[in-house]
Image 1: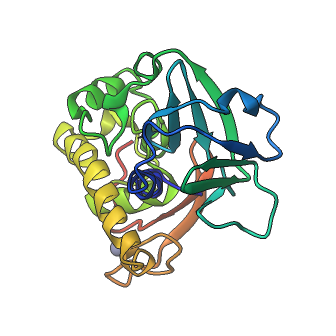
Image 2 (image 1 turned 180 degrees about the vertical axis):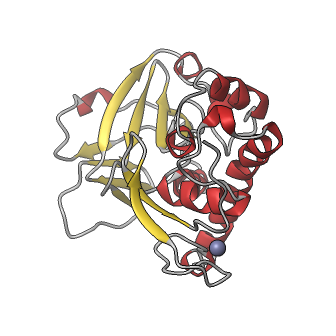
Length: 244
Ligand SMILES: [Zn+2]
């Protein structure tokens, strides 16, 4: 499932095509949304917010969410039916197995850009405030909360918790403030490391715990489905402190 950095890569690739100001000249796909609404409309911007890719038009935007199995192709096609295919004069964007939704009006009114860990507007102090509103929540759930850490997915969650030495089942309120601040800081830092490693095709080899059997110190890792979200979690019971 694409996490925030993968959507940033998509946005950067699309930005290179210089499609802003260009019209959609043809479209197809098996989506159930009223796709013809985009025909002959000019794209005003492409944005990303966490795991959402946004194609902005004058009065509305299209939100593309890749869910678990979504994918895309730029100027080429997969051997599978597209959910949506958008043609411009010199480019074609194809989206597969994704969820599409229109967002009406000014996109800035619908999105809190300061919650996106990879955005320029990212606000760590705001994230800390939001965590304090959920003192009893488990930190593994907090990290996946898109209202707090938009863009953080399951891999980033596993790796960041190992990096900062916090056990995934720790209770938010029990984590020392200095550790919590470190976690917030590293959620962003790790996302950019993820981005750079992914661009260089070396992401997996940098995983310290995700899908691994031993941590870098040779301690056996635990794999379990933790938190309200019940997402697959890899952690080291030696290196990661449980604050409960
Ligand atoms: Zn360890």
